[in-house]
Length: 75
Image 1 (cartoon, rainbow, N blue to C red):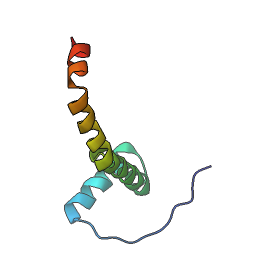
Image 2: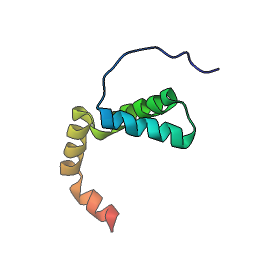
Image 3: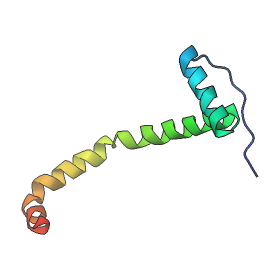
């Protein structure tokens, strides 16, 4: 069963809004479906683009400590 949708109000660039509506029409989907897809894509993108600082710090430490091993393994 689909999750119920929550109504909200927002403003958008007129041209961008037109393009999104055209995508919905072209794909034969409701506007709200396209908006939900866009939201999901944006959330996923934002989650993946910035690794957590502590993870990167440990990774960098690993590179320093195990550089020789990594070079050997890469051969």
